[in-house]
Length: 227
Image (cartoon, rainbow, N blue to C red; front, top):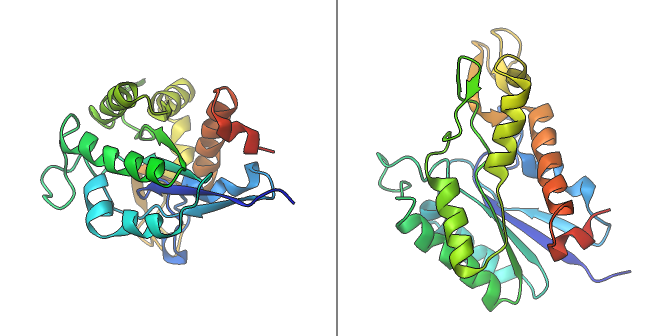
């Protein structure tokens, strides 16, 4: 059997594994394993509510440092909670601390002879009439791309890809991919919920497929690990 390779996902609730009391909310990272060869293990370390700042401060990056091996991959996707400037424990400025924090993730990967891959934040479902907001996560996607270009780090613009996907299917149809639950439909949300940031199972699968497609179309060594 080929050498075991681990792909670590460092991110927020849009990628994270969900507990039963949160279903049908689903993270795109949960749908990832099925696309990779048998010798590839997905280690989904994404955590609800975390930004680059709180993920580092709480020791989650240090935990990855302890287990990541040469030849492994570190996928990094943050932005949604970095946006929350009103929260000093999480908020960062896109062209300031956010980029400084990204540097710490990248530095760790290179120190461990692992491969980093930056993903811009998945889109929020934010429509004005029938037009989707291309700034749904503010300047964070652009700040990540700028950072990647400066340090010559691989990046996939998943915000653009998911934003265009949701924009194309439209305001009404895109609701099917997010955590929209009618009252009485779910024990976890008895009063219902309208959440335009987090995905349901169908949405998580669709986003995972879009990320996998972007990897296939890239020149990244990661694509050799796909089935």
